[in-house]
Image 1: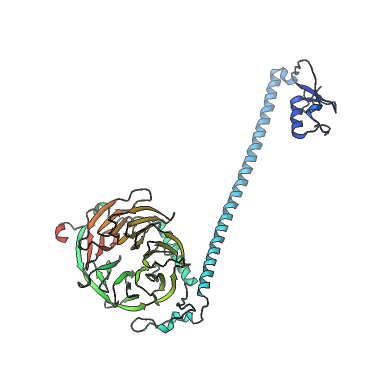
Image 2: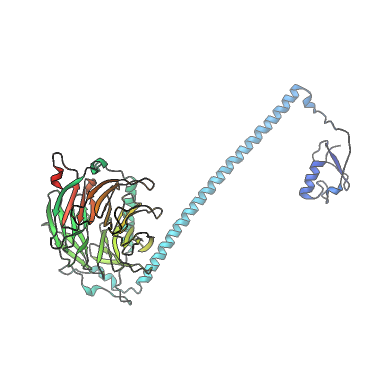
Length: 527
């Protein structure tokens, strides 16, 4: 007799006392464990209802095909064909599953992109709404401020300022057209940075190691010595310096001649910056004002605007990459975003987090959508220019943050303070290296990347040049220049075009140029 489940002769036959059907023991045990009923009649069935049957040893009859070699070969062929068909079906199923998985992953990726875009649009809308709420009520007379006519001495008429209910001046805000201009500039510069290569004309390390003082130029008055800031216009190789004597000087380095002396501030000039090709210079001062100077045909610079929006010393000026806008940072705990052509303050931003420290340094990121500021309270604050929102804060410094510099690679930031220089990775928003070149009583006054992002210079009681590496590698100091001013305070340092020279300002009245001596020149005579 055959098993009612498999149809074959059972090795361990058992019978159901309810239906009288014969089963293979192991098969019916498994079925009862899974379903608890008879597989044929469907009646409830337990192992107590199963009765084993004693039989003699069962010898399975050999199939007819296995009685001869040709028959066995035929069986093997049939088995092989079945195996091949099964394998083909499995491959088809695998291919279909792969296609379905690929489609699902594509849909997931597309959904993530859509979600990210919607989140970004939501955040921008929230920021714009918050900005609009800060500016309400917005008088209808505010747009007329764009038509402000400068007076003959460059000062804007005070009657054009519109005051809000809290007694603060109401600003027009950074318009969507300006934001589009900033965004387009950012996209173009970011694309260029991906293709950027280190110029072949960049001064090699071997040359920088041999730099020595080439010249010293007395640009400022002796009764109030000190150069607090300098800037270099690369294409024309002209240098602007900001002095304690309340003057700024524009200097032609190749000829060694002063082009123009910018007089007008009543107190020390704290920062100076060139705009575009050097036709415009912007200066800030301890007299709480910012002046915009425009070059004339006779080579002199005339004051075109006096900006009086700050209520305390203005410590820093930084120019946007479009060359149409600038930001000023002041000890009054605000920074202002200006349109250079009109001299109009579009936004005056105050940190609403409750901190009352003033700003001591500021710099735009090379792409122009991020602003970095340093405070008198040791903080470094990163701002989104489009929304004027504080998006990151770096702490850890001791003393006021005296200088801030972004690398041209776009993701390194160097900051200087009383305790030395810290390097920050903007991708991870963390400090990855700290230089402490001086003792605790000697602040680092200046820090600056060169335009290629290959070198970093810092100034304090001396001037040091480091080779830029990555986050994990060591940044080696390749050259140290003594402070030849005798004051022990190198206040500002900047690399010339292709790092072919280094300009240094100190607390004496001299601008010093360090570079590679020409063949045949006596190094000792130049120092």
